[in-house]
Length: 179
Image 1: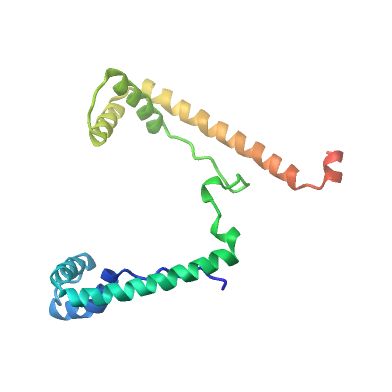
Image 2: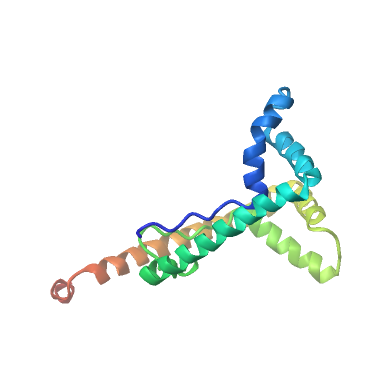
């Protein structure tokens, strides 16, 4: 078994798939899938318990089969299932994302808000920060823009150093001694 098994649909999703064509016929003016989903949800909520049970039983059986296949898959390919993408090593293609002037300003302004002890919603804080950023003088704005440029330059320098390190690591030892 090379490929990871596909997780089966829930009872509700299987029911929706089965009933969708009926909804399209009964409500031909409803084109958006979100509206169709609302109608399907209403139909599901009023459906006979026996019909729901048949879909739930089928879904439970498919989930049991899936779990069995997954346990077999994990036994065969333990390395493939244990890859942690959060701890990927830095390579030549990995770039550090730098912050722009607005982000740097917003970080400073959030600190001021916390120091003053204001308790307002995040959305209100972002509106306030946006207004204050637009009100900045050119001199104040250029300060944050220069910080952002410096951060970008530092990131470029760091990236070039990483590239050199990566190249050195991939270079055979005999050639490294000559360098």
